[in-house]
Amino acid sequence: MIIKSLIFINAFSIVIGILLIILERIIASYGEVTITMNGDKEFKASGGKSLLRILFENKYFIPSACGGKGTCGYCKLVVKEGGGDVLPTEALILSPAETRQGFRLSCQVKVRGDMKIEIPPEYLEIQEYEGDLVSTELVTSDIRKIRFHITGDETIKFKPGQYVQIKLDNEGATDYRAYSLASTPDDDSHIELNVKLIPEGLGSEYMHSLKEGDTAFFSGPYGDFFLDADSGRRIICVAGGVGLAPIKSIVEYWQSHGMDREIEVYYGCRTRKDLYDHEVFEKLDAENENFHYYPALSGEDPEWKGARGFIHSLMKEHLGEGGDSEAYLCGPPIMIESVMAVLKEKGVPEERILYDKF
Amino acid sequence: MNLLLLLFASIVTSNIALTYFLGMCPFVTISKNVKVAFGMGMAVTFVMTMTATANYLINHYVLIPFGLQYLQFLVFIVTIAALVQVIEIFLDRYSPTLYAAFGIFLPLITVNCAILGVSLFVMLRVYNFWQTVVFGFGSGVGWMLAIIAIGGLRKKLIFCDPPENFTAPGITAILAGIMALAFIGFTGMASL
Figure 1 (cartoon, rainbow over the protein chains, first blue to last red):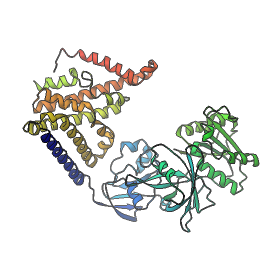
Figure 2 (figure 1 turned 120 degrees about the vertical axis):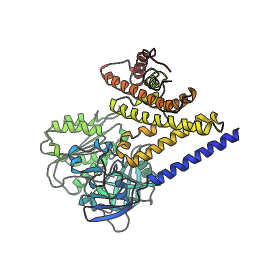
Figure 3 (figure 1 turned 45 degrees about the vertical axis):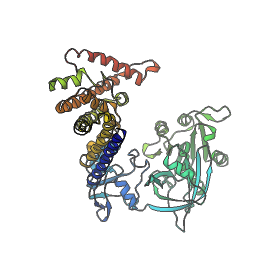
Figure 4 (figure 1 turned 90 degrees about the vertical axis):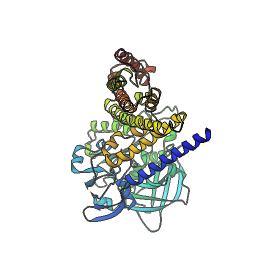
């Protein structure tokens, strides 16, 4: 009886398994499709994957910060033909006006046939680079400063505040994770990334596992979060935790170009152990009258002499009238929202507030 | 048993969620708003009807002739898992919008005990083919009604201030209990 049931269960599972494989082969196969970009460029690819993935595989780099989960909305593109209906996952991100113009989230659109799409020309300039890791240093309990030298004589041109995407392996498939550039664009053969270790986080675990001499691939630069170098206005930078990375790039650029604009850096963390580059900023604050540094800790710390509480309440105190200012915010969504409210209250026009939520 | 009576009984008097308390996990977690509850309810109804029918056929034409009824549990679970996969493949190919709307619900349903429960009730009560189809469909609709009702009730919960330990799942279970009491009122009309 046991043998009979064993044979039956095995046979039953095998039959079902084979049935599923056959179905998958027949039904979920889309064959070769042609993708036409901006009306002139075209390439062939095998369908069944997301548009974003297919573009990446063919070395067309589209900004994407959330790794294809459909939450950041950076990967939106105009799909002229072959996109099908707008999916409920996209409706959450795209505004009705964008939907009317034909925008779609390329990470959600599955390629089921020939497609015609439009890609902004600046995306076509994004390149892929190979980098050798030259140093990796743990600066807080969970944040690493990682520096890469770009292999060969290649150089990367970017603006302070922009980000790159690191290529990594996700169970056999290629995946990408976005990290802000923390170094100054003046040194165009090196990049520095600040990576906070997130338990079970694919990208951060990979980045923290890299050692000196290891090679990594990345593409960039991406993003319209970058310093307006010529405006002459006061710069307000607000960072939460590892959101300091792009702010560091902006500050370094400001310093090396000898700008006479005033710059204020607000930096919020939970505890003293989470602060990094604290001394660097303190020194700058002491040496340069145009540089103002306001750190704040939200957690309990009896030895901390500085400001306490959340960063937006500190800003309420120190930030003067904000009419002739521009703001750069990088941190968790909740921080961005509360800081935005303070900035608007102080009179900083909305179009001059740039932010990078993560 | 009269098919119409069976349909009525499975939807109302012998409601799978409120009289047997099956499928409680999604019932508590996915009932936070009516729209999502409706999506889950539709998916459950769909899968329940399909799996009850498929399991009936397998039981009748494979298990009974080979004298293997004692494998019902194992076989039913495998059938449910496989069927959900097949439905997913088909939806993804032919109705991407519906596929996206069901989203995560379809794979979730694979491990919903209400689905297996219905297949097992069919065997216990020795239904014939059409009774199975009607009972599967009716139980799904019943479950959907229950989750929509609780979804509607939970929306009103924001106006209440239950004791700390009763927030979210606790108060939902109490609500479900009171709703179940109301459903008992129907039992005089028909029962299974």
